[in-house]
Length: 404
Ligand SMILES: *Cc1c(COP(=O)(O)O)cnc(C)c1O
Picture 1: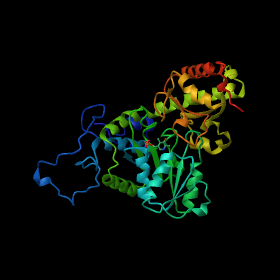
Picture 2: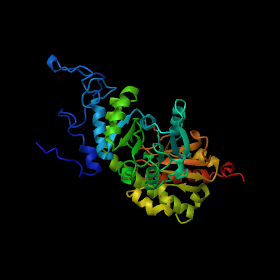
Picture 3: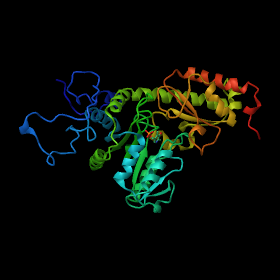
Picture 4: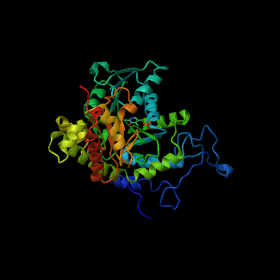
């Protein structure tokens, strides 16, 4: 039999394929889909250990799936390996954020106005029962007290703006506060917030980790074993558990996470460079692009911050970018002109998408389009974008020109 030695030396792509090899004793190569809600006790009555002596916190002792279940456990084993921390899964990203607030019970949460609207909403709901207070992300350090929480989302959607994790970790820890990093736009392979001082890392698994637009999940990871135990215990009572089916889809997804993200990030960078040279007037297609696009938002454009950003995201800047168009009408109409980019909300799938952000965000510039790059050939995506812009710009329709 092969040795079961430590996996610590393996890299992300290997861990994503093999860290859960020993979770099931079946001979199946692919993980079995185990959906049972309830698990049989031993038929040997001498082996029965009644509650309360039976540990309700042993994740490998299966008896009811709200508490723990094999496919979810297996997904968490693989996630723990790739996140280099104890990973606990939830029914959605927002359920994970709620669980973090229940765990830490902070008096204050320092959070940016441009962090995901749903996370703001979770804090608002929790504030009905507690006196939790939202304070600005850039509050003076003296505004933070022991046990408070900095919730740092980086990079941000739709701007792609990245924030300095190490600097916020220092700010939090100097005051006895904690740092939670929402790293949804930069999954393992692109960013490791623990290496920069994060206490908790959150992902919406509904995005890149799921990657196939067919599964929803949330993940909290921590290197603190006591916190992980408490999160599991809380989850077993609150019932915000991830289903077996979504855990199975999640396992299917993370097998390819590294290669997907490398390619998606690379293609995005190529398209952003092309669009930017268009805006600057140096691309073949500049005549069209300068008439359509006012500005581009992507982490790679944040050149003044490269002294820390290159270290924070050494392998690429992610697959999401935004375009501010020259007019509201251009932003509203471009998605319908595209063939490969599907007009929809959300992002992170292997299929490219675009959203006129005004469809789901009341506060956003009405000229903003958010793009998510998938696994199509990047030159095909470029052709599609150029064809869409060309048909609008050359239509002669005056409503596409911004009224001054
Ligand atoms: C999607 C998303 C969430 C919420 O995740 P769900 O899985 O939809 O609950 C939170 N934060 C960010 C940055 C997201 O993109």
